[in-house]
Every structure is written in structure tokens, then in C-alpha cells.
Image 1: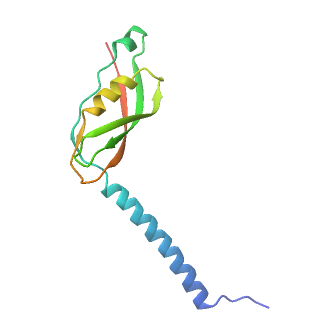
Image 2: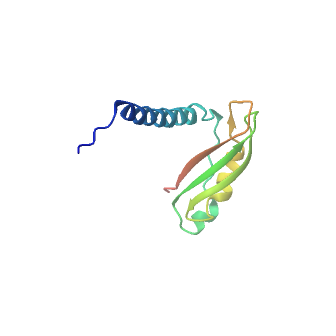
Length: 118
């Protein structure tokens, strides 16, 4: 006996697959469309302590909490390499960043890379 899927079974599977794909695309587009627009960037200073420790480079990934008016209200360090060397400089700089007001609170992640070539 041969199994032959009915056309309604194939149609419903296709519709489900299409719905999942459309949903994923909508989420991706919404995430991209809702990314806050930076209107003021303040670069972090290279910490003197890092220079004293002979650390010439590093990177920090941070998450900013942004108020409805576009001001940064908090900074959370997510990753840092090396750890705890650039955190204060990143926090101070990001607290001075400003975003286009969106009318609602939001978060935004950035990665800042440090390099000090003397």
C-alpha cells in the first residue's frame, strides 16, 4: 500500500511553514526598525590605569537603558576583555550618549573597542 498525502495536508503544512517564516521575518524587521537612533556619541577615554598596567587594547560590550526622552539612564557591562579595566570609562561615556526620543523606554547594546598605540 502506497501512502499518498492529500493536497489539504500539504497545503496546511505549507501554510504553517509560511506563517512561521513570515513571523520570523516580522520579528527581525521590527527589531531592526526599532533600533534607537544615536544623536550624540561620546567616545570613552583610554584609562590611565590600563596604560600603567601595559594594557594597550580591549573591548567592552554594554547594554544601555534609554528613557523615552532619549537619555541613557543606566549602563550594564555584559562582556569585557580584559575584565574590569575599561568598565568605568565605558559607563561614563555611554551615560553621556543621547538618542532620538522614541516616546518609550528601550535598551540598546553596543561593543566598544579600545586601542592605545603610543
